[in-house]
Image (cartoon, helix red, strand yellow):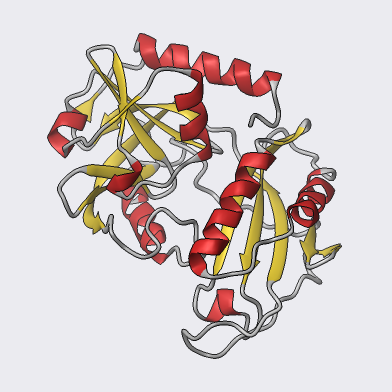
Length: 290
């Protein structure tokens, strides 16, 4: 059985000894500070991106920056300066001394009221990194008992208000799985807490449309760009009856699912194997695919 310990990148790593970019400069992790009244802390008034980083640098920076701007606009925040964020990412990633890591970009409204009114500003930029275990080829997932609201104001936006996903991921870990899958209010499969879901039905690769409440994942979009994928609504029963199932995310890349609730899937399905190989080849050939 796949266990939570080997199912995927689930453990956090202390940033002690590393340096963090705050606003316009690198500081030690111990010195990194933001205001206690920063809106990202007080009300979740912020957006973020998480990028995979190796010794070659951070992957798909342009796509992540474009999504960061879309998220900021959706939340009513000023658009971040892409050159400034890119400089911060490159400065943090330059100190990479691990095989695989994560770079987290957080953009908040800055200092604000102790409530839900708009922040006073100026915005806060924080960029930090940490090593992370490489995702294994196979994993287990569970269906979550809570619904994803596909019509919410922040649906499909990467905001720092992540409590629902934290609770969902904890639920999955308690059941020896690395990811939990949300069904939406219409009864269709939406997404995971931090990954997009794909299924293979009679040789056809299918994923839920963004109208299901799913995030426009960077890896999801690259898989769609590099191979034939059909977007359509999937009921839970239809999705679980698939021949093969896989997840995509910035840290997982293409990851096969071998258990979904009580249903088992083969660990040698040809479609997922081919897509995993294709993604690895294309990603290695172009660090910043646009």
